[in-house]
Image (cartoon, rainbow, N blue to C red; front, side):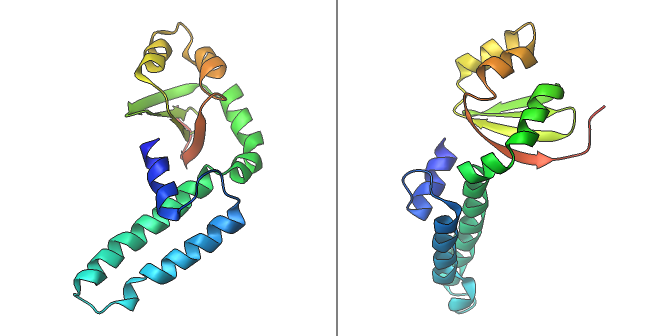
Length: 149
C-alpha cells in the first residue's frame, strides 16, 4: 500500500483516475523532469534522471492497477485463478505475490500477516485464496512467465 500511495502522491491523484487523465499527467511530469533539460553532470541532471525513472515506474504501476486495465483483463484473471493452481508465493510488507502454474504472477496489496498465516495454514490454499484473497484485495498482474511444471 505504501508503494501505491507514493505513486499517487507523485502523480497528485487522490482516487482511481481514468487512463486518459493519468496519461496526461504522466506526459506533463516527463516533460518537466526530462534529463535532457538539464546540463550533464549537474546536480539537477542526476535528480532528473532518478525522478524520470520514478515517474515511468509509477505510471506503469498505476496503469496496471487501474479499473480499466483490470476490466480489460478480467476474463484472463478469472481463468487463471479458477483453473491454475498456486505454484509459489512470497509475502513482503503487505504485498502477497502469488505465482500460478501457468506462469502468471499477481501481486495482492494490503494482505496482513494475520491473513497470510491463515493462507499458509489452510488445508487447501487455492480454495482459501479464492474465498479470501483473489477478489478481496487490490491486485495487479506482475508478470507472465513460462508455465511451471
